[in-house]
Image (cartoon, rainbow, N blue to C red; front, side, top):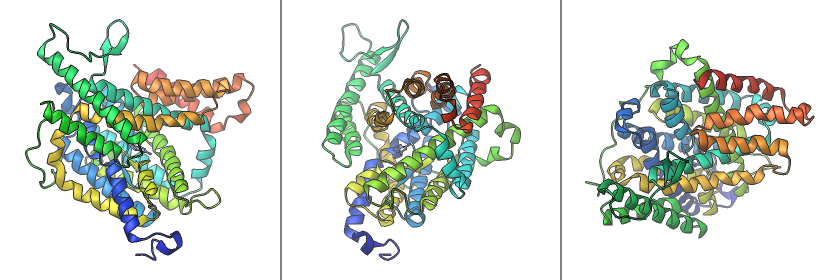
Length: 456
Ligand SMILES: Nc1nc2[nH]cnc2c(=O)[nH]1
């Protein structure tokens, strides 16, 4: 084991790797609650819930996908990088693909499976580099940043901090109890205040570089919520994992149905899954490996294996019943705690397996408890804005549109589409059309078709 993971070469030991693995697990454990909450449509009106998979099954799928993905990364990629279903793509799955486009969740899972299969092929061939080079850096950063604003917006809305307003579309929710309020309005104010408390607490913990900040933030928010009668106490702590039967293999119901799978709608869905996962994984692997000092001449050793591990995790997750599983930026917490090898991922993966038996604890997860996690992950992703060339208007404008449109249209795909349509136009009109890769011109027409035919 020591030899396989190159402990001596990387100057590490079992103790340090174990602490790193636990740290990364704690930093990402929130996904065990947030992912089933989101994918099962828990924050949608009751009449829409029938369109979504069952909470318990998605919990089991989430924990298993994270465990399998992280163990594959441990043994194939041999990196201290953990995986779990990604925030952002779970929101895209729930709100755009199923809610807005009306695609059945089983077919959406087939889309996840297809996109990850294509990703696997790309990661095993040289096409990978060609794609990375064809998309402008500014747009890649804008997509990550826009997803950050989008999931923060979801958190603010779920918590009742931002509410709808007939005159201005959105406004600040009530944060004080006023005379004449109905009981449900008073409850909404209390929940919004609980979320604000959790948010400030988590932000303070993050700024103090506490590794498990998001996890501790959720835990304390839930306990405070219980104290004020806003959160139910769990009936028990430990139980057997909920059945996977409702979601396992559901993706395959649609894999044989070519007319459903190869529609224009599904093309956009599969492209968006693929695009976001591909660039997210590339960026995360490079970023975390660089922090761990694992790059050689600026390149990731075994990059193909690492990306293949990301793709395989996504395929496994789709079969189990969750949106795209991907490499987590929170792995940086484990690296900060000293993790250097795949053994840290062995520990993280084992903890996800153990978590399978703690599903009753999830009864304490309410929108006020998940909101701080969504908003803080939003901050982490929004940091990509720093890498956009703001002083060049032909670069800044498409990037800005991409970022802004994601929360405003409540759709990652519409944000990507806006940026990819405008980018070739601004570059051409600036006289820099030759700098635009031919692939970008093809995507211009694909996304134009998306707006013309899919926004009916
Ligand atoms: N890189 C990355 N890290 C995450 N942490 C939580 N969600 C994500 C995601 O989608 N991508």
